[in-house]
Each structure stands twice: as C-alpha cells, then as structure tokens.
Image (cartoon, rainbow, N blue to C red; front, side, top):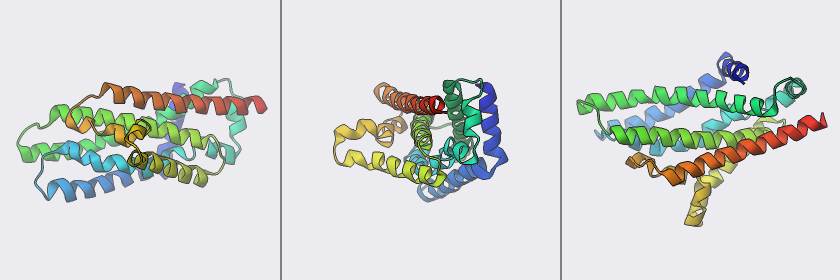
Length: 228
C-alpha cells in the first residue's frame, strides 16, 4: 500500500492538481482571513474555519475526480485491477495519498495562526485551534471518501467532479430541511470543534461516513475486477 501512496502523491505534485488544490484553498483562505479576522482585529483563528470548511465542497473534487475515473479513461484501470495488489490496498492507498495533500494544506494554513499569535503577543486559543484542525481533517476525510466513491462509478472526470460538488452541496444544506438530517452533513457536524469541543459523537459519525464510502468504493472496484 505504501508504494501506491508514494505513486499517487507524486502524481498529485508532478501534475498541477496538488498545486492548484493548495493554491486555491490558500488564496480563498487568505481572503477570508483578511476580510473577517485581520481587518476586524480579531484573534479568533478557529473562526476562520467556519468559512474555509465550506471551501472543501469545491476543492475536494480536484483531488478525487480522477482517482478512478482517470484510470478508466486512460486505459490503465485493467493494469491496476489485475496487479498483485488487493483492491483494498489500492483504494486505501489512493485515499491516504489525497489525505496527505489535505494535511499539507492544513499545515500551511497554520501560518494564519502564527499571524494571530503575533498580534495577540503570545499563543492564543490553543485548545480551540487543536480541536478545529482535528474537525477540519475529519470533515476532509468524509468528503474525500464521497468523492472517491463517485469517481469509482464513472470514467468521466468532469461528471465525477460535478457530481461530487452537487452531493456535497446537498449534504451542506440538507439540515435546513430537518435538524435530524444533520447526521449526514459533515459541515453541520463540524460546528462544535471551533468552540474547543472534541465532539466524540460527531467524530464517530464522520469516521463512520468515511468508512462507509471507502467500503462502497472497495465493493464497486471489486465487482469491476471480477468483470475484467
């Protein structure tokens, strides 16, 4: 699996995808930071993630749309499925490679926290910052798993990307219909983390959503392997 992770990470950074994802996320984050924190003189770094968490809806598909759809379109899927590696290791390898790009992005975003600490003349909101980043990564994992699953269903990368955005947008707004539906909305589940609360129930739900879509992807790819 480690070989797959290394291969996929290299692909992200040997192509524009990794740079576009990080660049787009950091550009938008910089705007939100300047607009809602810097100009107001706020030192509430976790509040930045109320805005940036929604960016994942539109940036995550950059990482996931070609995961399997690209392999299918390029004609390399057969080589992938007939290799000695298990379907589980292939799916997990691709997922973890994309997650590593997310982690790198989260590390870059800490520069805003450094700026806030400089203005605050010391460390500030440490517990809230830690729980916020944990929540951000958990939501990113859930989103990645959704995008990866959709990519496994089609050979068209554009369809994969657009379908992922649509599904994530639906999950974002569905709690407006009923609060009980918040359990299937990663953004809704994120709300407690910026308050310094390491929400156990929400964390389990996000991890369960991630595991469910990873399992669905494995099932889809296993069926495709059998049909080859």
